[in-house]
Amino acid sequence: MTTTTSRALPLTAALLTGTVALYMTLVAFGNITDFGTNQAFVQHVLAMDTTFKDDDLMWRAVTSEGLQNAAYVAIIVWETVAALVLIAGTWFWLRGRAQARTVSTYGLLMVMLLFGAGFIGIGGEWFAMWQSEDWNGLDAATRAFLMSGVVLLVVQLAGERTGRAT
Image (cartoon, rainbow, N blue to C red):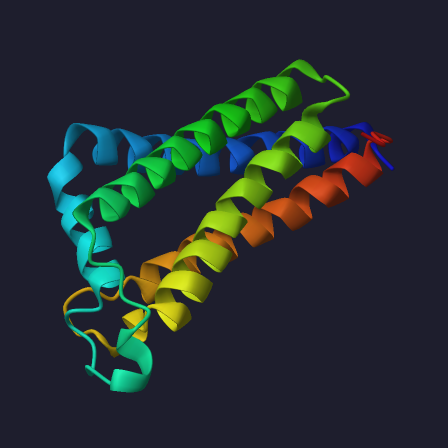
């Protein structure tokens, strides 16, 4: 493998990890500084008030404002921690540190769990978000999930090519 190729993959991993870090930082920042916009989104999804009102599903609805807000704050905390982990992963890639792959992997998995399990699985299926014309975030969640998955593959490849086992 040439020197150029051996440097290109870690740089690619750094830049792509940094891209997801930037995205998550902006998402968390937006949710913190404009709390009400996505708070309404979470409340409507959990309340299931714009779904088909099927009695077989409506028992799943969470209508307690306290629980809805707790869920939203937990999402923001998760986003913030994921952003910080990804920023650290990016820094480690740029500094050539051995822990770059591991830290980036943790951050990317946090993003994939949030958007895959959280928004696509729980929001989309359990709370039937797919039924809502007004409060349906499945497309955005799928984009974030897929972007993070592609970056995770690059990070794993870059770690293997550069001999980083961690």
